[in-house]
Amino acid sequence: MARHDGTGGGGRFPLVDAVRGLAAVFVLVAHVSFWTGTSALDVPGAILARGDSGVAIFFVLSAMLLLRPWITGRTAARTYWIHRLIRIYPAYLLGLAGVLLVAALLPGQTGGLGSPGKVVAHLFFLQGYTDDQYQAFTQTWSLTTEITFYLLVPVIGIALGRLARCRDRVVFGTLAGIGVLGVLLQTLSTVWSRSGNTWGAGVLGRSVLGHLAWYAAGAAIALLVSGPRDRWERVAARPAACAAVALCVLLVTATPLGGPVDLHLPTPAQAAFKETAYAVFAGLLVLAAMGRPRGDVTTAVVDTGLARWAGDMSYAVFLWQVLALQVLYVLTGQPVLTGSFWLVLIAVSAVTLLVASASVYLVEQPLLRWAHRRWPTGRPTAPTSPSTPVAR
Image (cartoon, rainbow, N blue to C red; front, side, top):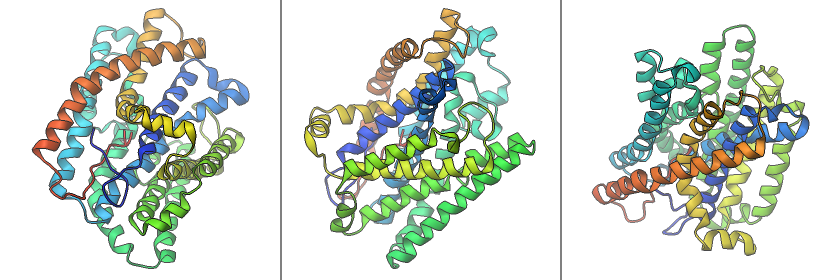
C-alpha cells in the first residue's frame, strides 16, 4: 500500500502501521458488541462499545500522514490525487460489490438493493450525506468524511505550512481553537438532533466540520514531526506513558460521561465530552507511535513484520467486517442483538481476514505497486501516504 515514512528523512515510524491495525480491531470489536447486544451489559459492554474510537484514530492518522508532505513541500498535487484514488477506490468498489451481491441475493433479510440513487450515492462516497446506507456498509459513513478531507488536504496543508512559520504559541493555539470549534459543532449537532432534525444534524455530526477536533489533533502532530527532530522526539520520548494516559481517557468515556452506548442520543454535554476525549485518546495513541520501538514486545512487533501486516490489512478489514457480520447472522438465523460475543468475534474475524487478505494481496498491493512505478513521487525525499481508515 502507499506509505508515509513518517520521519524527516528516509526512515519511517514503524509503529504507525500497528496503530492503524489496532484502529481496525477497535471498530470490529464495537460492531460485534453492538450486533450481539453485549454493549448493553454494564461496564464491560460499555468499554467494548467504545471501540468506535477507532474511527477517531483513523481520522487523526489521516491528518498526520497526509498533511505532513504538504507542510514540508514534499509532494505534488497530481501524484497525491492519483495515489489517493488508487489507494481508496478499487478496494472500496470490491467491498461495495460484495455488499450489493448479498443485498440482491438476500433482499428479505438485508433490505435489498434499494433505489438506483442509493447505489449511485455509494459509488461516489455520498452515503454519509444521504443517511441511506446498506446495513452491511454502515461503517462507510466515515469514508464520506475522509474523502471530503482528502479534497481539502492540499489547501489545508499549504495553509499549515505557512502557519508553521509563526511562533509555536500561535500555531498550536490556532489548532486548539479549530479543535474547540469542532467540539462546539458536534454539540450543536446533538442539540439539533434532539430537536427532531435527525438528517441535517446527522450530516453535520459526521462531517469534517463535526470532527474538526480529531483532524486538528492529527494536524498538530504533523506540524510537530515536521519541525526540528529533537523537539518532537522529546515529546514522543515516553510512548508507554502516552499510551497509558490514552487508555485511561478511553476508559473514562465508558462511564456515563461519554454518553449512551446504544442508538439513544447523548446530551449536549456528553457529546462534547466524548468528542474531546476521543481527540485526546487518538492523539496520544498516535503520538506514542511516533517514538522508536522500545522493549522486547514493540521491537518484536516491528522486526517480525507484524506491524506492517496489520497496517496493510486495516483498510480491507474495515471494509468487509460488517458484511461478514450480516452474512453470519443471516446464515445462522441468529436475531440481531443476541449471540455470544466471543464466538461471533472469532467467526467474523476469521472470515474478514480471509476476504481482506484476498483484497490486499490480489487487488490493493498490485495496483499500488503499479501506481508508484507509473507515477512516482518525483521527489526523492517525499514520502507517500497510506489512507486512514482511515488512513484505512
